[in-house]
Image (tube, helix red, strand yellow):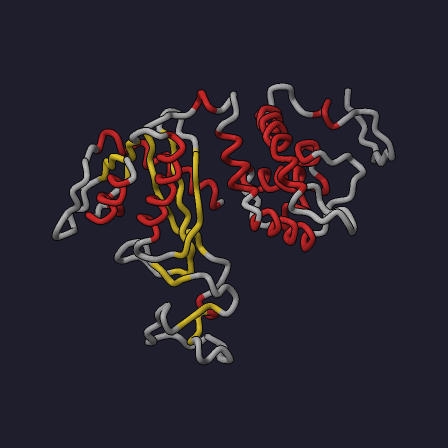
Length: 311
């Protein structure tokens, strides 16, 4: 028998958002871990806020919303606020009731910057990795590092000479444009960079990730200026932090972009054994331990993680 459509516009619902989420939904596990970690950080979070004035966005909800942005590849905070307004799954994860208003995107951004300055995200990541349910999943000694370009939200037309910012930027053909003499007017921190010969140069940043090799989980990451040494310097910094926490010799797999003698020596000094793919184009190859069987798959995992993070 055919069902007849009737426009429905009820004002009230007797079904809680909790009941609408499937029992086996992955976000249930992530939400439980997230709130456990945030409870342990609560006292430190309170020091970032004044005791006077209007209440701001609760940092627990702000961090949960940012996790959704990463997990679902939401391209901007403005779009994140839009989806929080109508998506019951997102509201439940963040801790908003069905009738709660969504935050203004400008206020959200300012509060996020406050947490960035307080190194809250780094502390959250560290606590999460030390959680009793997460720690057994991680390798203690075998890791991989990789980096990729993250395209900036700035067009080539915005990349103008530093001493002539009033031009419209439309006529840049047959001109030599360098980061030393040019700068984007819309995103001054972006750098014109190409990752390989023969590829087009783009205004970009560079993202880096350290993956543990047991389950391919990200254990550290950062974003830096895009330049020819950023991958190696970021790798050294992240692995140095890991080595200090583990207090044991680590091994790391890296691709041929890391195959330089100074990088190999720097890793050995911080108690890390490098397994680097050989760069045949170099006239003087580095002196790292090269084991393709160890570095091939883990490096791909790091690349996949950064690809997903960019989306």
